[in-house]
Length: 230
Length: 230
DNA sequence: CACGTGACTGACCAATTGGTCAGGCTTGTG
DNA sequence: CACAAGCCTGACCAATTGGTCAGTCACGTG
Image (cartoon, each protein chain N blue to C red):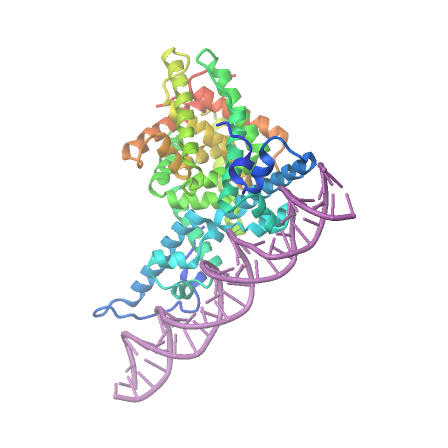
C-alpha cells in the first residue's frame, strides 16, 4: 500500500508541471503543499459530517479558507478528492499496524495491537469515521485494490494466529473473527465517540481513558483467547 | 421508548380517515399504511446509501414507486421523515433487547444478549447501519430524549453487572465498557457487512454464520469475564 | 344525482450544486 | 524593464434540489 503523493494521481494537469522534481519555484511548491494539506483536512472533516453526496465543494473551500475554484484547481473533481482522502487514511493505518511473526509472543502482539488501535481511535477519530462510513455505504469509493488489499492483510494475520493455536500458545478460536473483534471493539471508540461521551457523561476523551480502555480490552480479549493476562 | 404510530407525529394534517377504492371495498387505512410503510422502507435504504443530505426525496419516491409530492403529503419534510425512520429503529431494538435482573444467570444473560444482537445484525443490517451513520455524524437527527435514553439504558444494565461482580459471579471488569464491547463487536457484522463478506469471500451471510459468530463472541467475551463457557 | 370532504399529484419555483473558463496576478529570467 | 509561464479566481452555467400549491379525483351521504 505504498502510494506516492497525490499530485501525480489526483490533481489536474496543473500538477504535472510542478511534480517533475526539478522545480523552478521551491517557494511555490510549499504553498502548493500547504494548500493541498488544508484541502484534504477540510475535505475529510466535511465528508465525515455530511457524507460524500452531502458534502459541497463550497463547504470544503470555506473550511479550508480558499475559493471554490481553487479546490478544482488542485483536484479535478469531487471523486478525485475523496479518493485522495481515503488513500491518505489507508496509508496512515498501514504505517501504524506493522508486521507480526510466528516467533513473537501472542500476548505481547495482541496487547500492542489493541493498544495501538485504541490510541489511533482517540487521536485520529476523523479518518476512522470516514472509513467506517465508506464501508457502511458499500465502499463505493474505495478502489478495488484497497478492498482486496484488506483481504490479504487479514488472511496474513490470521495465518499467524493459526500457527499459534497449533503450537498451543492460545486456545482454538476463529482467527479471522478474532481480528474482526479487535478491529470493531477498538474502532468503536472512534466511530461512536459522540454516543460514548454522552453515556460516560464527558466532554471529551482523556489520556487516562486510553489506558483504561486499552487495559479493559486487553484483559477480556487476551484472556478470552486462553492466555494469561497480565 | 414506546412511541405510537408516526401518523400523528410526523405526517401532515392528512392523518385521519381516508378512502381510496381499489376494486370493491378496500379498507381505506390499508393503502395509507402500506404507503407509509413503503416510504419508510425506501427512505431507510436511501439514507443508508447516500446519507441524510445526499438522499433526495425524488430517489425515495422512485424507490417507493410513488410521486414525489406524495412523500411530502405523508411527511411534511425531510427532517420529519428521518425522525420517523430513526424512531422506527429504536423501537425495534427496544423490543428485542429486553430487561435483565440480578437474579438471572450472568452466563445465560450474556449469551442471550450476544446471540440476539448478532441475529439482529444479520436480519436487519439496514437499521443498524443507519443508526451507526447517525452517531458517527454526531447524532444530529436523534432527538435529545433518544440520546439520554441510551445513557439510562446503559447505566441500568451496568448496575446489574456490578452486582454480579460484587457477588463474585464474574470477574472485575468495567461494566460500561463491557456493554460497549458487546455492542460494537455484534454491530460490526451489520455495519461492516460489505467488508466482512469480501474478506470471508462470500456473497452473503448464511444461517450457519450467525451460529458460528455468536458462538465465537460468546466464548471470548464470556470467558473474558471469568465465566466458564460453555 | 349533486355536493362536500379528504386523498392525491403535475407542474412549478427559488435556491443550490458541481464544474468551467477567460482573464488577472505573481514570479523568475534575460 | 519586458516578457513568458504557470498560479489562481470571479463570474458564470446547466442541472438538480426541497418544497409548494392549485387543481384533479374518488367516495359517501342525503
